[in-house]
Length: 110
Image 1: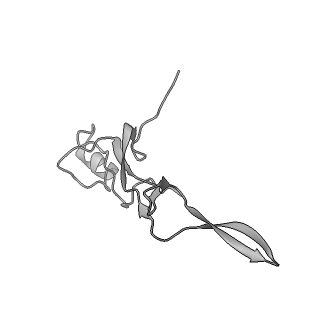
Image 2 (image 1 turned 45 degrees about the horizontal axis):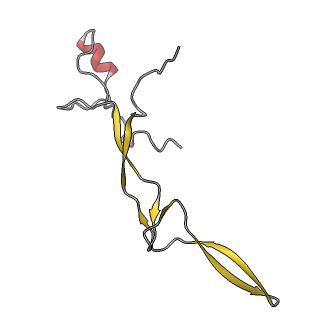
Image 3 (image 1 turned 180 degrees about the vertical axis):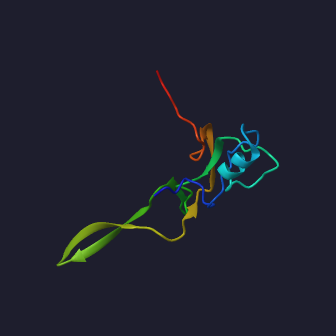
């Protein structure tokens, strides 16, 4: 669970350097933040794809093959899931971009 959150422990990429108050309070509040040279946008533009390509170039979440089983002289078809020779889809571009799961924002609709 929570697989879409930050993997780095103690890293808060959306902290602003121009916070109000004393520097001691800001240092205590943002003790886990690593200083960065550039601002991180709150949007996610790509994600890892969850689908796979098979040998034929078909794209799907799961692939099955039909096997014929003969039992007591009767033929019966059974589906078996394919795990071999599948190529991951890779990086997928999101359109429109999504808000990062770790960005501190409250969505409000009237």
